[in-house]
Amino acid sequence: MKTDLTAEYVRRFTVPIYDVGPDNRMTLGAVLRHVQETSEQHVDLLHIGYEELLKKTGLVFFLVCNRAKIHRLPFHREKIEVRTHPRGRGGVRFYRDFKFYDEGGTLIIDAMQVTVLADAATHRVRRPQAFVDLGIFHDEPVDSQEKMVRAATPADLPKVGERPVYRSDLDSNGHVNNCVYADIVTDFLPQCEESRVCGLQIDYLGETPPGDCLRLFARHQGAETLMRGENLHGLSFEARILHE
Image (cartoon, rainbow, N blue to C red; front, side, top):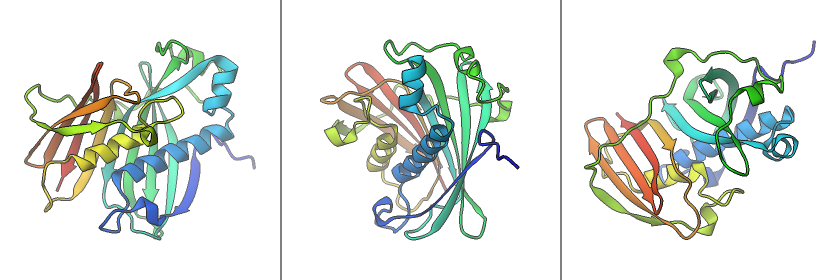
């Protein structure tokens, strides 16, 4: 019986040493790198990977939000299975989830990725019909409970530092890779050593090019940290980090 590759893609890996931090657990940036790699492998199988879609249509998908509910972060050498499913569409936004399971089949990370279809040359967002017409995924509405609400930050967040943009931060588009923002968030979290991160949402609002410098603003209050990054052109990202 033929497998429907559009319905689900499964990727398995063992957590490498370069994905863990000083506590021997996977870093937040590494979590998003595995989300990104799993997505890339799936769309490559469907012949709609970045280069192939660009060549065929002149269109690309831009990531606008990552969200992760973290039950626990895996350790070095743990065997992990990631299952990804297209979840549907809300307006111009396409939703896809990523569920990380440990070797015993327990769900340890539940992530959601939100993208929009855009013209590669102008970066203007295109109507979803341009992708729906390719006939690869069913055009279904995303469950209302899954829709993202922007992690809007208040204007009075105190400044916590600055972060220059380095060449090693860049992706193939020449801007800061979305996973790097999770590393930046980690580096500039206000001191709250006694708490564990159990959730992360990053909204990507403006591309940050090489030579720029992000100005970081953040506040930790109760079980939540809000953070904002601004570049020379304005707002770059906003993030909400949940603690327990």
